[in-house]
Length: 462
Ligand code: GLY
Ligand code: MN
Ligand code: MN
Image (cartoon, rainbow, N blue to C red; front, side, top):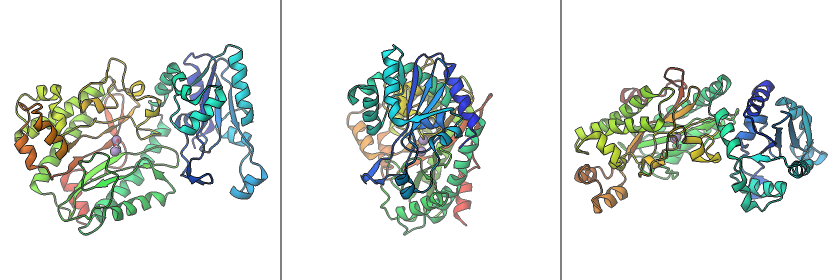
């Protein structure tokens, strides 16, 4: 946890947003795995943790936007809590860790909110995303849970996004901490993905490295020789010599920050000519995108630039024909690159996405595209110094997509379907890094993880 002054400064900046009334942040509670006392690993609500620091269930925070005063709501441990969980700090001791001067029993929260509403003061909150929180907020605000979400405050959301999307030095250091362990996980994956090994055996080795730090996953690991399935969470295949494996795995650090890294490599450690040709294209797409990152540039434009690199290079191999810009503008390129170039990352792997994907990723002159492919881009707006984004281009051969488009002759002037069909069993390639936008460009965070063909082959030869 950062120093108490960090949280006080964040709350003070939020107060400067000029909102009135009470700002309510309800923390997460434990989620049962299958019965009440058997819980999933606890994950705190990120906005609560951003302003109130504490990574424990059953808390809520209120900031009085008019006076600036913050209050932590929760309960002191009683003797039965101590019997089951050991000594715990008091509520006021916990509040002090985030420089919160006032703490009150949780039972007083609903009354405080009712009094504020009766006095005509707005109670502002972010859109909840968990069922438990919806129900609890319905109780706290005395409305049906189904109505809670619609009552969220867009102005508060925009103010929170404006703060959370600009990372402080302490946050960057924590993200690089997360990337250090992620580095070890990806090297271990490359070195253990031998012919005859099952995918889940490699996943177990990687996740064991993370658990040795007492950390958790930032998202379910994607580790598969069927890399063309974009969010493939199955790990049951046997790896065979020459298979191309896509490994998209990151962790959530103890300090509460995510990493999100993808590497693609061949089982046996040597890229075939076909694999290498396409791998180098994806690497060029990523390098071109990273080189274009700087404040003021729309991420949507960087996505298109990366797609244009792909089209030009794949046209040389015979996959596309025609003008590269026209192929990008038409959306035809998405047959091989059907997802977005990236998203913001921070406390959440898709940072702040629970607050509303368009509120976080669009605006400032950027609108979500209706096109298949580009429409999945989660971040389209202009970049700002201090943002951290993922840069994750890919090339995939998705037989069902190729077949469906060919059948309807979609973009058939641009796409050489016969060539795509030849690659139906190829799989997919993605390369993903986490990149800080700096004042005049960008910096790839973390110790470099092998990425060129030569670097990957060298680390796999060990
Ligand atoms: N790991 C999911 C993603 O890259 O967005
Ligand atoms: Mn990602
Ligand atoms: Mn990823």
